[in-house]
Amino acid sequence: MFHFKPPLPFMGSKIAMLKRVKEALHSMAFTQAIRKDTIFYDVFGGSGLLSHYIKQLYPQNEVIWNDFDNFKERLDNIEKTENLRFRLHNLCKDYSTKIKLPQEIIDKIKQILEQEQYLDLTTLSSYLCFAGNYAITKEQLFNNIKYHRIPAKPLNAKGYLRGVMRVSKDFKQLLEEIPQEEKDKQQAFLILDPPYLQTQKGNYRDFYTLKDFCLLVENIFKPYLFFSSKNSDILPFIDFYKKYNPVFEDYKIDKASLKIGGEDYMICSSTQTGLFDSL
Ligand SMILES: C[S@@+](CC[C@H](N)C(=O)[O-])C[C@H]1O[C@@H](n2cnc3c(N)ncnc32)[C@H](O)[C@@H]1O
Image (cartoon, rainbow, N blue to C red):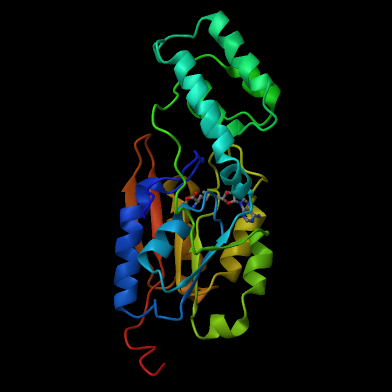
């Protein structure tokens, strides 16, 4: 079963790029950059949406999801979050989503939340705070409850990430641990969706710095899909940098305009038809 968005909200998930990912992978499969023994490494796995989607497209292949943020904990607690969604939806459904909730309702929401041991702050922020305002502490959440956008539809994680292998480590360690043989045989396929430089980092676990970006581009190998944005100046950078790392020669690029302005880029490594005919 395909999920076209993560079962729980996650900032930066690649919902809008899935169709393009499918097309890019299919054309790479055509040129044999994807084979039966290809292992996909979703190095900046976030919500796992790309891992899930790729596993649905290529069920025979191994897919490794790097869950640096421990999204698994949120998934493991989805029933508790669903229970809250249901109660909060019933409490708020008669109030407009456009105007501030009455103070008595805000107080009731707080009472309900106070009784809970586990709170998925990201999901609750998306329900109760201004769009894009993600609380990282309970206090922040409580101070920012103003409006509501609580979906009527139940949360559903059925089959999500089934068959996908989970790891949780810094990207540098993960890249280092990929066996040299997999790199040499171009068996390891990198899915690279790092935090974008020069854009908001939201509620990710750690800051991702220019130094991290440099370490990443230094260690990239083919084949790969690499996501970035116009704001990050990635194209002029790659044009400059390809003389230092030839994996950036002859790359292909897919540009997607974003609703909120700006442009997302998906950079695909070039492939050579017939390279793996003998395998
Ligand atoms: C743009 S998001 C990835 C979104 C993901 N593709 C999705 O569809 O949900 C970037 C992710 O990289 C993670 N990240 C940041 N620093 C990292 C590091 N040093 N090692 C591994 N992951 C890191 C962030 O926490 C975030 O989950």
